[in-house]
Image (cartoon, rainbow, N blue to C red; front, side, top):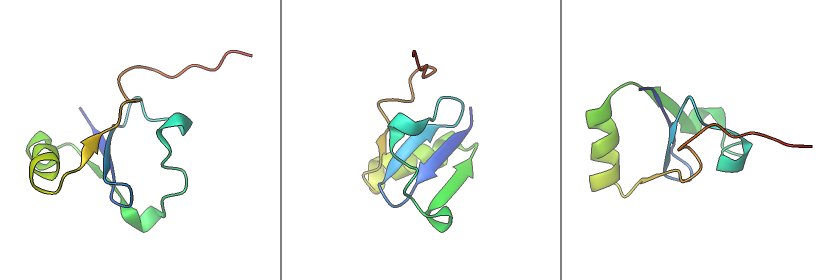
Amino acid sequence: MRYFVDHKQKRIHQKLYAGDRCGFTETPVEKREFTDSSAYIEKLAAQKLYVKCEYCRSFQTVIK
């Protein structure tokens, strides 16, 4: 699983499910990071108090 880390808001996103509702669009590129390491993600969550994004649990769809 691939992750997208937003270092500005301290949120961890699942890259596959990340979308506009996640709120990372205002985060500068230099504050974004992509990783495949589950151990790194768990370390961020446990030691740095990063949280997993509540919107990155399933695909986001838009109905008009």
